[in-house]
Length: 563
Image 1 (cartoon, rainbow, N blue to C red):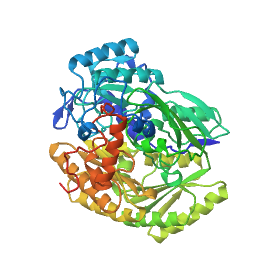
Image 2 (cartoon, rainbow, N blue to C red):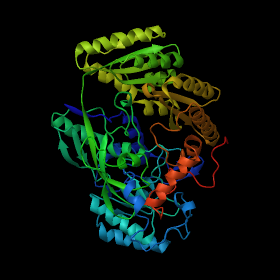
Image 3 (cartoon, rainbow, N blue to C red):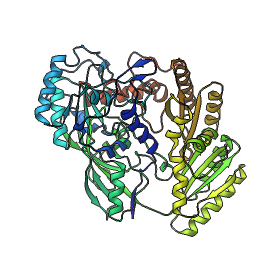
Image 4 (cartoon, helix red, strand yellow):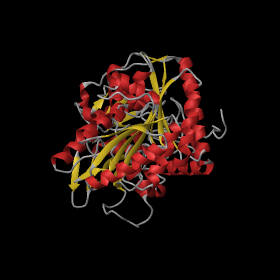
C-alpha cells in the first residue's frame, strides 16, 4: 500500500484558480485586463489544473555549467543583466515583432493543432485573480505532449530569441507564469499528463509533469496503492514546496524526486540521475534545480518516490490564543509521537468556516489545532491521541474532538482544506485576496504569528491565518477591495516577511519566489548567494530565455534595507 508522500491539500487553491480563469471580471483593482475561458484548443484536460503553477521546472546544473555556448547563432548579453528581465520590449536582447511572427509560424508547423494565438487563451495563461501582482499576456500558447515537442519549441525560441514561460495548473500565488515584457511563448504541459511507469516493488513511479493529483490518486487506488489526499508533482518540484504532510515526510527537497528528464534552454535533453534510492555519484543535480521555478529548464518526466500508507485519525482542539496553540505544537513534536499533520487555524478562520465552509460542525470562534495522527496499529493511534490530548490540555486546550471513524476524520479534515475558499469569502463581496506565506524555526513561530496578527488587527484589513505549525510555516489570506486597501496589504506583507527573516526564517516556505518575493532574496540569502544563483542561471541560460524576470532580484536594486 503506497501513497505519494508529497501530497497536500490544495482543493481551495484549485477552486480559486479555476474560478479566476472562468468567472473572472474584466476589471482588476486599480487597472484593467482581459480574461476569458480557455478555447477548445486545450482539448479538455481540466483535472490537470490541479498542479501548482509552473509545473515545469528548473533543469540541471552540471551539464549547463560546462556548456556556455549554444548551438544558436545568437550571442549572449552581458552577465550583469542576463538573469534579470533585463531588456524591455523592443530591446536587442530579444526578438522583434517580426521574429515573433516567424516563430509562431514555425511553431504552427512543428506542433500542428497544438498552438493557440487566441487572445483570451494567451491572457488567461498570464493573468489570474489568485495573484495580486500585475499579469501580462503571452504572444502564443503551445501544448506539447512529449519531450520531443518541448525540444522543438525550445529550438525555435533560440532561433528567434523568444522568451519561454513554463505553465501547467495556473495555481501560482507569486506570478510564476506571468508573461515577459518582451513577449513570450507559454509552454503549457497540461497535456503531458501520463503515468509512464509504476515500480511497486521499488516504491516509485515515473510520470510526466502535467499529471494532476486526481489522476495520480485514481491510478494508485485502482491498482491497490492507496493514495494520499492530493499530489501536485510538477508544481512541487518547480517551487520546492510542500504542504500539510511536511511535518512527517519533509518537503519536495527531501529525496522525493529521484530524477528528472529536462529540456535545457539550448534544446538539449538530459536526465539528472538514475532511479536508485541512493547515489554518491557527484553532487545532487536534481535537488539543485528544485525551486528554480522554470528558469533553468523544462522538466518532461519525473520519478517520484512513494511511501507506505499508514492508518490515520484526526483530532481538533481549541486554544485561548495562537501563542498557546503554537507552544503546544512544539511540545507535541518533542514527544516524538506519530504526527502526520498539525495545522494551526486562527479564530477568524474558524468563524469563516462556520459561515462559508459548509461544515456539519459548529466551531467555537477561537484558535484551533487540526491534528492528523499516524500509526501502524489502532493501539498506536490511541496512544498518540492520549498524549496529544494531555499536552494540549497543559497549554489551555479544550473542546477536544477525536474522529470516531474514517468518514468522520475525512469530514473534519476537509474543514481545514477549505482555507483559501473560506478566507476569500470572509473578506466580503467584491474582495480579492493576497495569499502569502513565510516560515521560521518552529520555536520562533509563536512570536511571529502573534506579532503578525497584532499588526493586522491594527488595520481595517480582514485576514484569516492557517499554518503548517509542525514546520514553522504559516499562511495569511489578506483581503482587499480597492487600491488603498491593497497598499495597506502590501505593507503588512512586507513587515511580515522582514519579521520572518529577522527570526532566521524565510520569505516563503512553499509558494516560491516568482515576481512577488524577488525583492527579499538578497536580505534573506546574502549578496554572495544570490550572485552564485545568477552565475548558474547565466551558465545554463545565457540568452535569459527561460522565465525571465522571475526568482532572481534585479542587479540595480538594493533590497537589503527596509523600504
